[in-house]
Image (tube, rainbow, N blue to C red; front, side):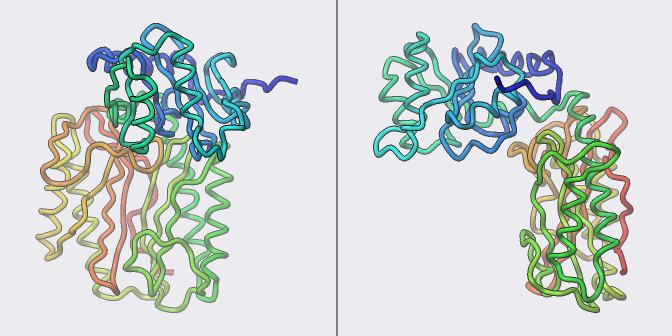
Length: 389
């Protein structure tokens, strides 16, 4: 029995719209054929979310064809047939003999494909920053008649402005995030192991909310005392105790799209330092959101936050956030002073106001928001409280 086509996260027209935007950029950069290798960009252009990026793979976009062609390891090809919007003939599995080969790999199969389809003399775009130097050199040497163009991050910048369909999926992810944060509030108690609490929260991220399950897991960070000054540590083997502080960051995930959230919890009465930090950060968060409107810049958001935080006598060294969408981080613009990226409707950001002050003190709060003509629209409805448990 042939692998059936699975439910599609978006209609075909949405993927063709995205491909059209990429092809316009290809024409601008004088590129005939593009090999997309960044997994999140492959997701964006095809709907594919399976974890096969551990070996060479490439989504081949050509100016002359409506649908791209995907080349991946043969054992991963059925997943691509199932998930991708394209016709099954557009998925090609390269042979298993290339796995662990001393001289060849899957990129050799992709180069063979390009030669077989008369692309040997094309202007070829590569996402060079996501490729090893020897891989780039392999394409240049084996396709010596082609002009190789660096297409790094170009598709990622196109992703910066979301469609209304993408916004709808991110709102579904946000509802899952809220449900998981509520579960955290229920299960974090003295005497409970961090791992047990994490299991309950993660179970909610998988079960989902409003009939929409989580389709994957994003980053999950549970930084509890004495590690509350860290930012990217998961749960430990410790037990929560009286006086523990717990900083949480995670996001629900739907079809690759994430809506992240950070909140701080205290078992027992929080210290005066923690309480005042929370009040200052919330004031800064609200100032930052008020600055988020079309025509303003990413730097304006950061300046509004930093200015308010300084009024309270605090400062934050790290940036204030980043674009979010497919995966928790889209590596393009940055919410930091001096970033001149102009805000446009349907850009989405994680306003990440984690502040790791000393080795023994840190605090987190955040919101994922969308830029609209009326200003910032926050996806979460979870209270901006310092939760005393």
